[in-house]
Image (cartoon, rainbow, N blue to C red; front, top):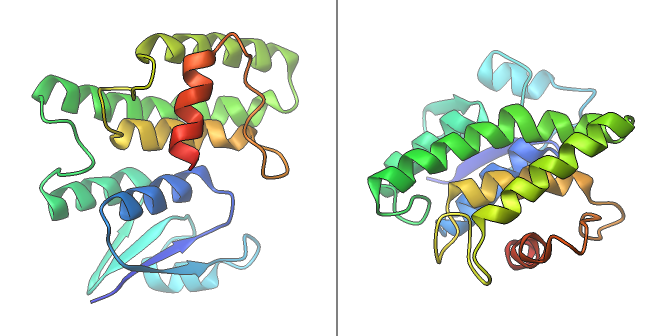
Length: 179
């Protein structure tokens, strides 16, 4: 059975889910939704938000719920670190990306104050990274996918986000995940 992902181009929550599907090596069909015409999503899921994943008879809304479904589907596999402490931290960072970083990135386009706050958050993320590594070790986890998707909202014209050169580990990490 083919998975179907209903998404809107540029949506960081959708980007996170599509990257998780790719990391798991799962085949899926993308259904691009016009942001102004969400009737198809509403018909499928009973609500208008994306992403929505259809897995057979199961319809899953909300990116975190979709990730939980994919983790269950794959027994954690490629999305979670092996260590239970790091697994918990991966979920905490995923929530931080969704609840703090995505809105802050969106607000930073129009507000100098929010750009300054975002710079502080990016400096904190720099501290998580070892050179050449990922947020929680040697392989990307759902924390990396969520944080990368949130930061990707800063991209313009297909270029990487305008990150300070002082954030060399973050820039390197971003590039590894982008490719």
